[in-house]
Image 1 (cartoon, rainbow, N blue to C red):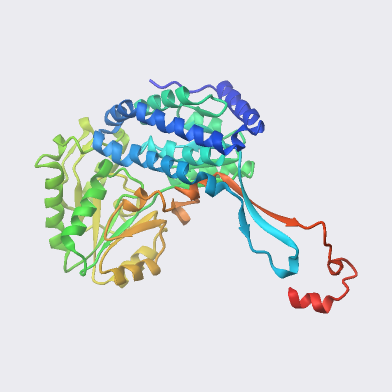
Image 2: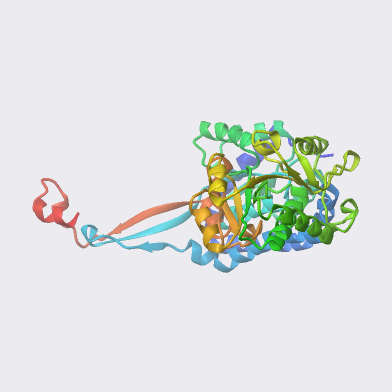
Length: 459
């Protein structure tokens, strides 16, 4: 059982990291690159314990654990190792004639101590992927795994303790009381992944010290299936995106807006896809996950009664198992349509046109993701007229797999973005600097502003 880290230990780590950052050791790019290489080696070494822990906590198969957690972090590390020196080099900018003879550039410097608070649904990826950005930027980091995946949290603590000194990177364990204690301290950045309600707690705490935050949240990510869609493909990719990690994914399809002409075709194709993925008994599939807690099971399973089950619907509380479920005839103001589901239940709303889908999406909070299955021109227009953190055309989930694309929310689904160079910038200050010549000092910039008519033309 995980033990809460004491307030005294938290204070000691915070003080040690502040002192270590002040030595300027982490400013050295080679130091950061070596730290990233050590992290990569540690992940490879701990691959089996991590995968075993992910199976124990979430019933994730080895294949899913590697694809959705380990490979994503390794890809992020490799991208940083390849590009870090170029990304951190001074960025030279043009200087207007009015400032001649000066030069302009942007320096990328580390913010300082970063606090990274991770959720339970992708407990390895969502803790270590931000850490890559923190290390690459030259920050120190205090990591807080989720207590809801205790076995993964224990393995991550061992991995970090074996790889880094606590004054550089440290793991803090515990429940929300520990979170509250952590948030009493001042950081140079707080990186939080979780729910909008908890994000408000983080923001209130950060406001006390004017600490910048990156908030990676969630929301109700819509899927739109138009009559122009390849319905078989749409059903297969939606079924995959919704059954991945048993729907416990911040960018999982959350509700379906489906054209009435293809609805029945989609339902049958969805059933065939689930059968192909998991066999006739989904419960026995080693590739299908479980709800993380009894409370999560109770909440998600309660949604099944809010509509007509068209696929799935079987549950088993002892195993926290919920079969992938399609719901029809749901009300727009029901819990399944107002709460973020975070489970394998997918409600359907029938539409007659894409204009109706646009209106429906825009009446709600901006989602973290949006997925549109339609002819590309129609899909692009839907993206143009709505807003979301990211998304896919004729696919689900896959935009997170590209380490060259920024990932983040908008509005209620979050603020800030990361992955690749954006991870570096998330943990950095972009410092503008003008270098002025000492050999020439033009007099018209000084009072009493002689030749102002001439100067005015340059402005």
